[in-house]
Image (tube, rainbow, N blue to C red):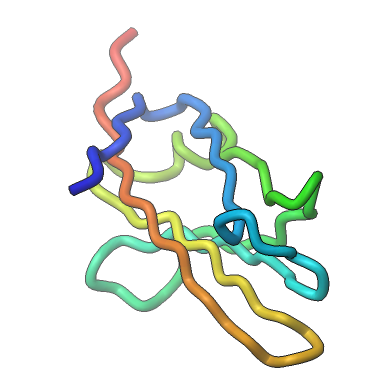
Amino acid sequence: MTAITVIRQGGDLSFVFDRDGEDITGFVCTIEVKKFPADTAIISRIIPAVDQTWPGFLTSTETAALGVDTYFLIAQLKNTTTDEERQIPERFQISKAWI
């Protein structure tokens, strides 16, 4: 079982998604942040590829807008040529920001 990443509300959350060493040519990565069990994405955006990965981060503004709770950060990978799809979910938790 993978440990849950815990960040403070208003902190940055970095991530890197890949295809386990497989070529990413033709794939588009869209990240979504969802609060289980809701299907509606709270945050959604396309992540540009860099060196066979999709690196990025949730900004302090984005995490400040999320409530103290557990969320899923999901990479939606879709190949625009073959229609192959894959999801890579990661859980994270927002804790209270102390001043």
